[in-house]
Length: 610
Image (tube, rainbow, N blue to C red; front, side):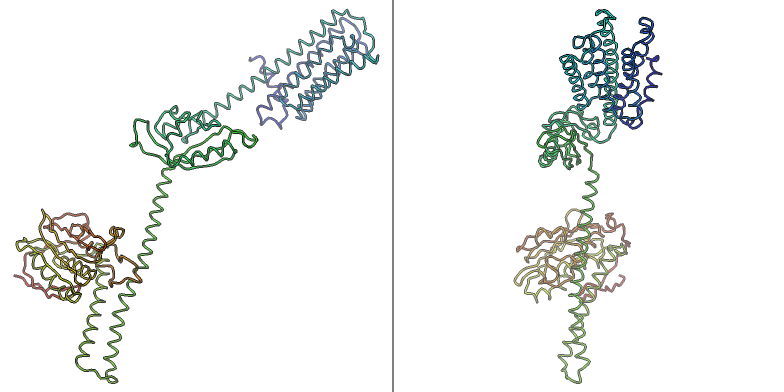
């Protein structure tokens, strides 16, 4: 009520500063000070009444009145020191002394004043401290036993007959009722303060839980969910009620349930806070598997501290969506794997290039030194020709390796010029097969060309097409054992040109198929591989095919051979494939060609206008 607000403000100002941070302790101090101030003021108010009725007080009356005013001193003591337990025990002693004094002059143990001893533990109950309540009860019991002992030994003076027994009873009961009313008011104020604080605390927690983006849940000792914050709507797309009881557990991914239960068990049974990551199913039950799962992190901790070990506790848990973090971790893992793969590719490249460059260079240097020092060791014409031929072949091998690296670099940087022009497909295929015939024959293989004579003209880069075929045939010959067969086919399928090179060689492991066409990649270890090569041929083929807007298909099985199929658009000039965006495509007019066919990766064409 507004009329009592100044009094409340005054009493709040008397509370010791050391306890004002704790609202509950402040309420207990306020109740003690308010009650004792009211009791002391009421005692002082009785003084004029006593003087009007009795006149000048005797020594006993002075002592009784002073004792009745002692609550004022106790209220001041608590306000000045903040020692709550001491003030309560001192108040218990004061009340016990007052009750004994009044009882001693009004009939001893039979005096109505002895009923005041009951008020002592009642007042101590407002402290909320067990130690104070036990101490106050002990003081009241000691006072009661002391009065009976004093009466037994004749130490209690005879009762004064100044007032009739009825008046004494009325005065004592009236004082007890007034003091009891003060205690009830203090107790009610304290309970109201506690309830208000509890409601305020609950409202704060609820406000915090309702506005948090993280999901807040409360779990019973058996793990069942007893409270769910509204964040369930944004996190899982369901009403909070659907997660109550075992609803949350039912949404945990089956593979993650042991980890989820272990974290809750440690918090409920052992009182240890913990964190766990798991997947939760989104959407309602009718959404089924299409709703998907979301990665979350749950941090849980027990609500009760100091509970004996083995006693199960309630747990509060905060669950947060970590899907984005998981995606970032996956991206980082992929990037790390890609970096490790690139590092291995670099190591493989260095090992491959060391082998591919050192072998022909040793041959060139060695045979050149022999020719230089011919005076010391004369050579006949045949040996000089053989050595010169070996130097020439080693030089071409080096040139092929360097050209392959340059082609890959130009293709990846978009600087490879595709010169699209119309030409007949069969002569090109036959010419490539004739180039590789000697190599196949030396390897003990059969090279078969299966080309339809009625193939129409196509528009493509003739030089690039020859390079594609030569690389594919060379690979097929290299990885086919003597006695095997390499077959080259060319046909028109729909609007595409289909070139296929099949062999009966060693085949390719299924695990290596997705990586074929990567620069410098070779099946097997680069240090102990049984076949020579830089690992650039198939990468160049793949790049040239993509520049034409085509695609490369590889089918193989270990020990049974490999089939490589190249599909190119018949009109390479208008293929419009995205891979050609970086290439400079130039259409040449129809012309006749005469090739200077050389068995190498770089073949210079001599063009004559028709």
